[in-house]
Length: 224
Image (cartoon, rainbow, N blue to C red; front, side, top):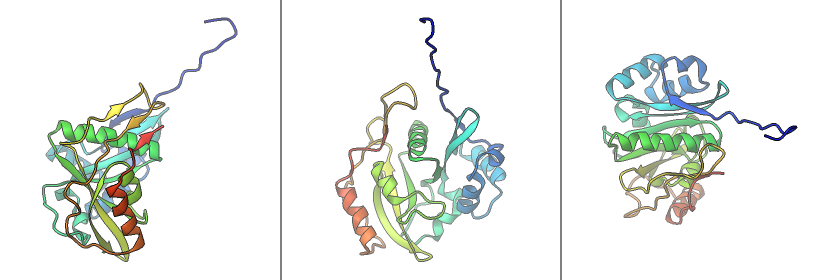
């Protein structure tokens, strides 16, 4: 290294499995678990689901500070799912419950979620997205932009929600185009196969926009 020139080293984020101890240190985790589990103690829920089913999410930290998390699990441990008027949902399905962080963090954590679930032989995953981006839900537009496809729509508490799905068994391999988070990560880009499954559809303007976008999805969901 030449005299007078100092090289700056960037601290890379660390992504780790969610742990019951994270309930106290990860903002929003306890609230997300309480909502989707129907009021269960977050630490007890994490321990029970991990013992029965396995990993339920990841947390990202940088320099010791939490950047975000992703939470997912089987429908049997997410009873709140049954309160949405979205038609019949099989008990064995897996749901993305919530992801917290900026868009870059959420996308990167979803890459890890996809890899984990595919490695465990899970064929697809659902999520209940909010068309208005409210509560413990990811925005519908965000997930559609990341390649998820809409399945059905329905109302709960005066709000419109969309059931979205990603087929993990048939997606292209997720690619990381750089060695760290400063690079670009492309999420799987999916197109609907066979159209929309009949369900509780509405003719509101947001609903038409979302389903139109699914027919001509963006090129992908990138971290730039």
